Length: 214
Image (cartoon, rainbow, N blue to C red):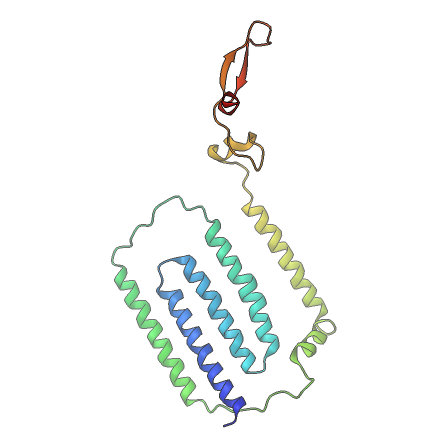
């Protein structure tokens, strides 16, 4: 085993441990925000595994789509949800947790048997200069140009629909109250009304406590 193979084995072990640990955190943590952040760690570790397989385009798409779009969308959805009720514990929650653990253990055992029994073949990798990104990019803009443009239009329609659905027509009373206050200013103290004589328009002028000190 040479130095390159050793680096690949160590990288594979670190990325695998990172993916498994982050995935367990996604499932086991009770804070949904932490789970969403750890989900991004799972996506990044999987992108690293794709790089070890010389799948540079799949790794780039994994980071751009899953980390940069899906995971960010999940975080925005979690943080923008207006939750108005407290969390209520589900009765007999241990039954659901036990069933979930049993199903996950069965899937893990099934995948482990499949990995061990499958005769994996090793390849020497792609030749230099034949990057998959260049090849796929040529197909996108030649053979599959129409589906590529239709997908972009579909995503634009989904974005416009999400903006329309998320728009709020009515604001709560506590949000409407401070609208008269100028931006980037602190709320002033209540002004005191003092009389200055009958020559004024209303017989009084407003004077703030800071003016009284001066």
